Image 1 (cartoon, helix red, strand yellow):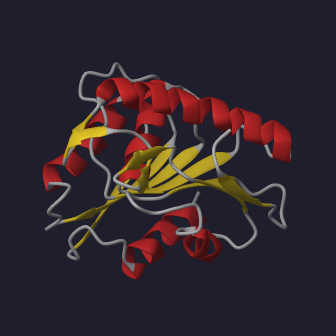
Image 2: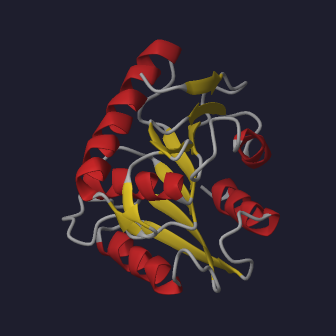
Length: 201
């Protein structure tokens, strides 16, 4: 199992939010964002199983922006399996999970989409990169994906976001790409934009 927090929502027809933190974060970081986007939804907030100099992450990297592809594959499978286990343990609908990820968490959420058809009902990706440029994407027809990107993000160049949008659209996903000018930060305006996107689903 992965270290996590589960909060039962008040409306069982609502999705379960899979919250995935950025490097150095933990399972508490994004709870306020989940509550802001939909206070009635259930929340499964997970801590990454990899430690980089004491900072939790979801998969290893070789250097800034250079992913350890073998570990990414392994950790994506681990997370995929964990969602299924957690659904059984906590009693939520495995088919109604929306990921909300930031930075490293957004990257592994994107790789769930790149790897499995039906892994996620939708995803809100904040400052993601293309997880695997060699991937043969599954059929993502109709899967809604929100991407929040920074025009001046020093960690995640703008073309990463536009390339990710193209790849996901090419697999059939419905992608909304939202730009902010606050570098790599997760800001309230992009959370509001994600809520607007979510409210239209």
